[in-house]
Picture 1 (tube, rainbow, N blue to C red):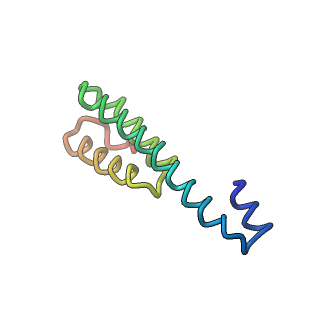
Picture 2 (cartoon, rainbow, N blue to C red):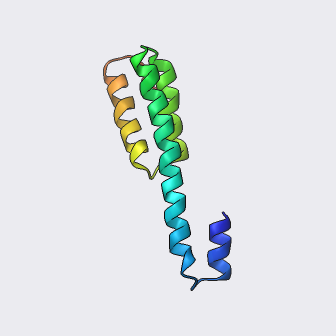
Length: 88
């Protein structure tokens, strides 16, 4: 949000691109953390818990690689009937 405000106030500032890149990197880290937690619960045979973390990564950080991986893991859980199809 502050990046958008800064870009609106100073549209030609060179730091805008760097700020956006930094924001994307931070989002990837947060999304990866959610994905890793989902994998942990999946290894512990807690499919419902893992699905919550995967779904959280997808919803909060949809444009990240971790969200893509989370979507794949959710699809796999659904195909194995380990979580209800209505979830995710």
